[in-house]
Image 1 (tube, rainbow, N blue to C red):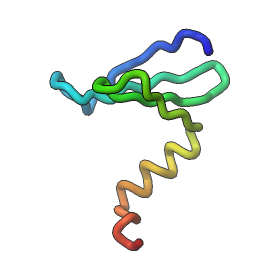
Image 2: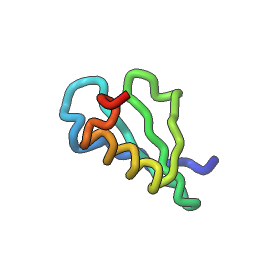
Image 3: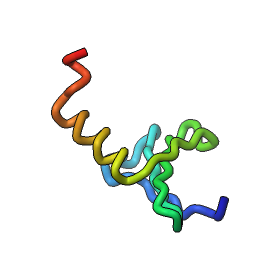
Image 4: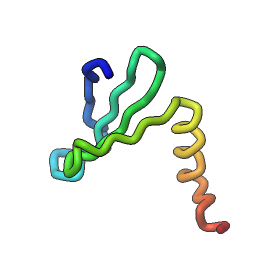
Length: 63
């Protein structure tokens, strides 16, 4: 895997538990948390978009 250019989410603030995001040339999106940077979640833009939209409308409450 090529070296990723990690950027801290603007919603993370200055404290701990920050979320970092990076994208690869293949269009893959990588997410990690500052407390466990060795754990990286990998997804695609459409899947991340679907997940964020579901969170915004709180679809998990319907389960």
